[in-house]
Amino acid sequence: MVKEKEHINLAFVGHVDHGKSTLVGHVLLKAGAIAEQQLSDGENRFRFIMDTLAAERESGITIDLAHQKFSTKKYDYTVVDCPGHRDFVKNMITGASQADAGVLVVAADDGVMPQTKEHVFLSKTLGINQLIVAVNKIDLVDYSQDKYNELVEEVSALIKTVGFKPDEVPFIPLSAFEGDNIKELSENTPWYKGETLMEAFDNLTAPEKPVDLPLRVPIQDVYSITGVGTVPVGRVETGVMKMGEKVVFEPAGVSGEVRSIEMHHEQFEAAEPGDNIGFNVRGVGKNDIRRGDVAGHVDSAPTVAREFDAQIVVLQHPNVITVGYTPVFHCHTSQVACTFTELTKKLDPTTGAVAEENPDFLKTGNAAIVKLRPKKPMCIENAKEIPQMGRFAIRDSGQTVAAGLCLNVTETK
Image (cartoon, rainbow, N blue to C red):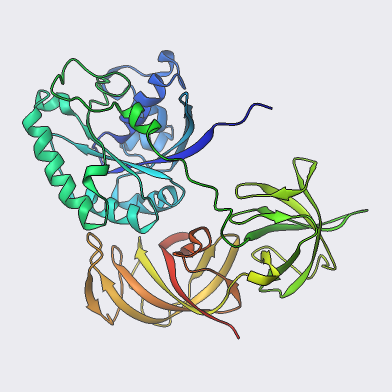
């Protein structure tokens, strides 16, 4: 079998109207992922590849997350085109939390806008550690080197505040519409001697599979199969599962020995991060475990939280969040109602600095550190230790009202 290329998820982030969708469209064209015939005419020719929803065409704004794939000689990529519009930050969160690297698009004729700041802060909060800055619309400022330098300075100061090192971040002057410096260096910017955007993609580091972390397999479904027995199904998030090992399911608290591991109807001796598996465990019945439980090794069992501290961003809430509010938390495959027991600190959403201790309430746009108590046992991990198991979205009345990550867990005894 030919070894598959390593895979990188790319999130395109930045202010509304700074050209993200156009840039993604042109990248897909240059990478050969779409054909020239798929483009529409006129000034929107690239944008509409990603903006396929009719509603988006009418409003001209990217609403949902669009996923597109392309490949280079080195990697396979999935593009997560993250909306820049204020109402759609919730989608940006789901996009960024899946991403391995971010492309921050800043328009040369417009500079750093409030949302540019917010997206930089959110990207870092959600675990994006590699960044490329696309200085877009360089054609609209007559390919001016002075304008480019000015922007590099301004964006460097911004990304430094959240911990990116500007000297490790490529700043690429480009035109998403004209195609300058996307695949080949442009004659219009003879003063620019750096890499093209596609070269910068290939200089990213593919994420390492977190095989050294403790085993965590959130359960999606549980089947009972004749002749085999109980077969839980889930995706290995971290660690390695091997045949013959003892595993425990939390918060169910049942354990047994792994008798078989199956992927795509084939038996395997072991499974690692990213593998979607069905596995049979001796001594565990179908009614002992359910969706939302997490399997781990007996000697490093999944953490069951009595309460936990978290950093959250309120995306859209009809009024205010106060102590006592109990919405549903979606974390890996579990959905558990959790009560806000303390609003510890309000943070400045553009810098992450503490803006207020023990605020009375939180509203749309606020970032905060809070204390939460699940209404029933749930598995969640400190995001610094096992990031894959520490992120969550908060939903209420059919919408995502906030998102965040777990900072600290008080375990059930």
